[in-house]
Image (cartoon, rainbow, N blue to C red; front, side, top):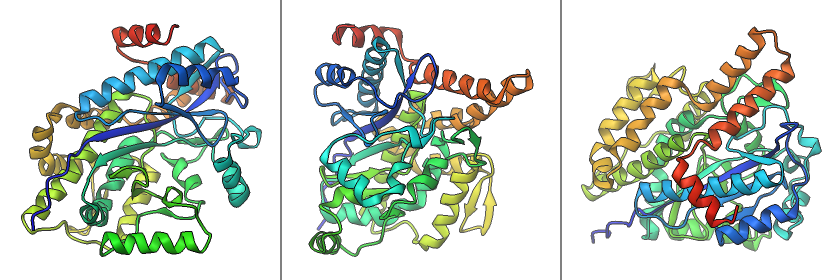
Length: 391
């Protein structure tokens, strides 16, 4: 029996940190009126996050990448405009360059109170933000089948997204330090392989019946079957300050899933590689971003990232054309040419230091650059969003 083609609908969630525009530090206690006004303006597309200094937005179900982009522009513009009224600004960066985690407070909400109690010190360090992409795969067993194949490509997506090179005022030497913090949680990392959706369900039910988790929303793998929607949710990526980078990565992920579906339709599969090997590329993406290349398991050698990216473009060319997002996917070349946010943050820091600036002045300059990039949006869309929110 041929599995019906999925809808491949797309939805994007982004988490932002809220910074004080005077100090550029995180705002540990944003006024409740900020979230209330954002919720009123965005009708269910904005929500609190684990820390009070965070806020999350999410598009509705979209059928084209352009639709997702338009919604993200509106969400960023609205949150940015409302935050500005309170002397704050959102940054789409996976860590803050110098904020101290000890100064942050978690949101007083039952789910977050339980997390804080269960995870203790690990939870208190979660001053990190991510970007999640949902792609509609309605058939349960197809979702599980693709879940076992797609992780090969997750390091490629992480490398393109890296935006967390700093932690508490220190250069970490990693392009995505966020992942190091997040990996301290249980039930993270690459997803497990399941033979069927029923096996996946039995596994989750065992954890629930043992009282370890309430539901599958506490499975925090790099990629997971969503507990709320019939989607495969990609979670490995850092959040990107530049919205075009976000869209390129989301479009590429969507195309990868359709590529794997096409192979299945032809009674083929992507070659299985041990998670041990994929974790090596995951680490290389986390450590180097797009700079140092990754292991090509077929060649048995490290290959420059630009070569791997061009090979990936060839693989998904048919799918990008099918979705009408060839240009958005090709934007990944631009990410490679100008560097990821992590590369730009480090370059900005070094530029200020070279001119004689202090460490703190250099870190403040990095925050300013992230704020500017986060809110670099089409002027017409910004005006429309601000007018809609009554700003």
